[in-house]
Length: 584
Image (tube, rainbow, N blue to C red; front, side, top):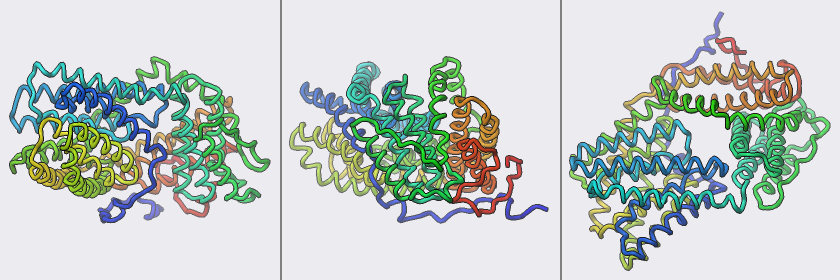
């Protein structure tokens, strides 16, 4: 007889929060890197244009300079390729906008092209998982260029400026590799150790999932880092040590180790790893603690590095990327929201006689997150930040108009402030982004302050309303399908991990990492679907059961035990029925 409690329930519309999205968090541990990078990448072309008296061209160099915001969490080998792709994508979007602007002055056509570009940029950034700031910077540049006066013969020279500034941004972001080659890897491993410390100090599903995700991210960073070096070998041992601390063990109930002392030790390792000194050496495993992964993990990573460089593997990855944008993709509804919301915002502002509807397009485009709940949060943050930023612009405008150098310095300051504050909360960063975006208009010619402020306030409100309306009307019923696919992938990865228990260490290590990756993807898919409205039933019980089964398998393989190992201590006593698909 079936238990009614095991049946998937249809998600109910949740009450949307008002205060929680505006709370300030802790700043990122690397907030200063994009902040300093964008200042350095912007200062070189802007001061050069100031010296030659052509500040009216700043909009084109700024397009390339803003590429310095991307890729700061990637190892330098991967960062170099990623930034090159970002520069090319930025140039392609800008070129499309400039050619369109030179061929037509129809507001209707310009808004349509801007909305289409925003949707393509959103889908591309989501598919590649480029990370913050995502598509927003690309959309800001292309939308602004659509409404800038342009002649077709000027386009090649303007794109050349963008490429030149993009080359400077590339050098600024990749140059530190000459000083600290393994810096990104060390920071990723330090985050994994810190997350493991949180899990040890406060066991539970939340901290365990966060630690597993951090460990997975550290392995991925090391895999993408290039050829092994002595420092990277030491970092591999530290990640294995962090994973051993995260992996639940039957000895958790009887170990003599003080959790607080172990957590402090892990945090100490994290601090030393993040610092500039030698990479610390993890202590040997205790006699009663199952650190079986600490040795075996190191045997599989070189083979995986070689597989990543294999041409066949790269072609398969490109095919997977294309399939992620094909029919049935859960990314398409979000791209459709972007297209409809940006078009609606642009046409609404144009109908009301606003001279710069691209601000409304950018506002709408910036709202769209993985689900409607996060989109609502971003709507609150963006609206509050823009309105406060307009007040900051009004206060600083007289100073910026004193000399051209003052204008350049003001833009550089707000560029730094935006990246310094945005990791605390998006609205706080928007307070600095807004005056910077308004000051960019001053490079061409001074504009009436009242007109700029009034247009920006109106565009912000209309863009937020139109964007949120589109998010509510365009449903994303495919989010539940992503959960079902993630469940299937997790069950498959778990089976392969159990089969690899008797295999050589390299095979066992790769199977465990594949299972961890599938569990991270399953949790992300479940969280995304939980924040969506108006979709089919969610298999919540199956997700929880699959997570428990996956972590039991990780525990068993780490201890070289069979699949009968017990569940994580924090989840013991939780009654979860077997999933309907027989995965457990």
